[in-house]
Length: 184
Image (cartoon, rainbow, N blue to C red; front, side, top):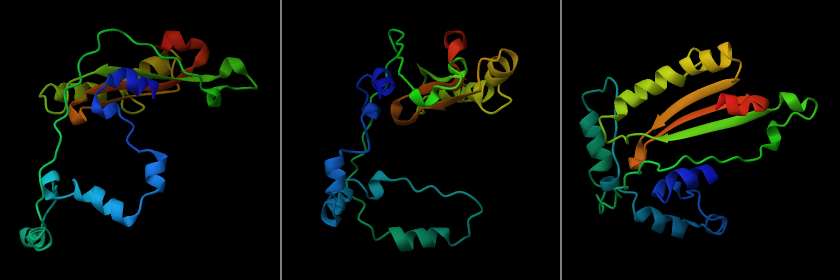
């Protein structure tokens, strides 16, 4: 939560999405129908179909979707996430990673986030390629260097997500807690 708040800085994607417990526990068929009627209709959806499609695909789509009320387009254009102005460091306790039998062997999690281009930008493609090369899988450059060569990571991964006009490049890993600063 603290990381999301610090990174998103008011961007709508930083809002807790699961809802308040009181609202969810009081949900019933009537208010769920009302909720869905506000935005769950064809003008707010994309139909994606892939593969070797049979020739009657168009007929099938028309049969099941042509009679649907298209509804009002209520899609939201999210603002672009602005670059970070300062480095923010957040430390949180992780009691589940503490090794009681051997405290020196405890683990720590690191999560480094960087603003990157959103999906709507052509600049996202080289960033995605960088993410794949740098930190996806056991043969990634980050794991080979930090994990295998330096002994600084039990596992380390990267990801790139540019959805909702919020580009985030993440490095996430499990490291020896006694070497946390060195791993970062």
